[in-house]
Length: 173
Image (cartoon, rainbow, N blue to C red; front, top):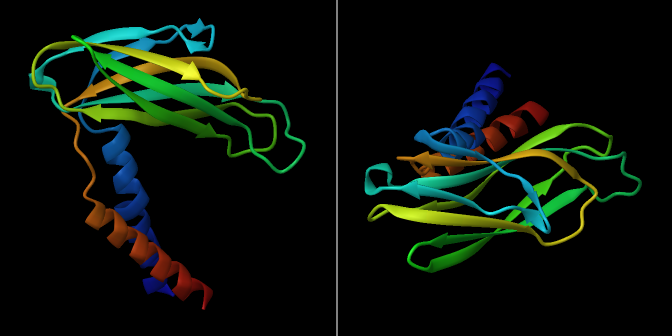
């Protein structure tokens, strides 16, 4: 029993905990840009980054709420994020937020939009367009640009998931 609990705790730290730490908390914040509502999402935002900050990670942080849900489908927000680097390289990334509650409540989300290498000082433009109607209301949103970020070692993440599952099975059986 004690060993199972230890496996679950170590699995949580090494799997999901390690992954979330690397995706959302490594590096340093270069820019924190409040986003203003636009016609189909948010007004575009721009920022500059240089090679001393490479790689950069663009993170969208959103605070939302919604009315109680009738039915079995959780409210979702879908965005298409278009990142354009001057002089004209452009890429689009899907971003999705799914409510964890069917009740009316305030929730905060964070999603990685993209992680990009920076070879020389460049100005980036980010446009976020909502792609589907949603029952969720956006209360506030911030585009966070982090520099000198690191990627999680997926071998450690999967090892943590294995330990977590093994510990959970030992607790159940």
